[in-house]
Length: 194
Image (cartoon, rainbow, N blue to C red):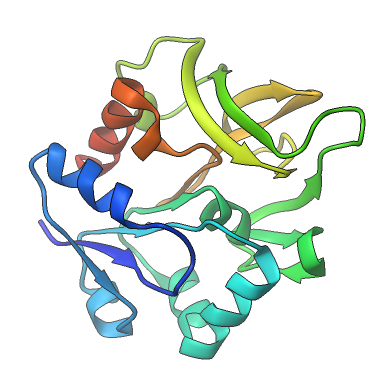
């Protein structure tokens, strides 16, 4: 199986590479459109700020490639947010895969939200064998509200989308590679999706 992690200079990808290796698979880092198109599974990571990450995607033309992919694609953290219609962070236009606009948490809570939180309302093969109220690891100041593509929720100030799915596109707000056994199982479920 060919697993490609999209390399566009956004965030620490080593921990994702190691998490995949622990599951017995190898992943390659690439920003080559052809290599990404020919992968069996694509992971779209992201740590950092939305507008600068989007600028990097545009500079490489990957903003045009990602929405056209036909294989399972997993956006992680900022990767998921960039797959949405837009983000308030840096007033960024997203890839428009998910029909949601990413917004900032209110000033009633400490941002970023950092640490462990529970996921609920699990609705996808991505969460096979994952118990309700499992703990996952998050670091974020912005969130995707609840919408028709929401496949898991979490709570911080309000209930928001912890994961999204539309067709072959999946997104998780949390970091599966840092979410212990639960995160490993979610990554494994993604890698065995057909």
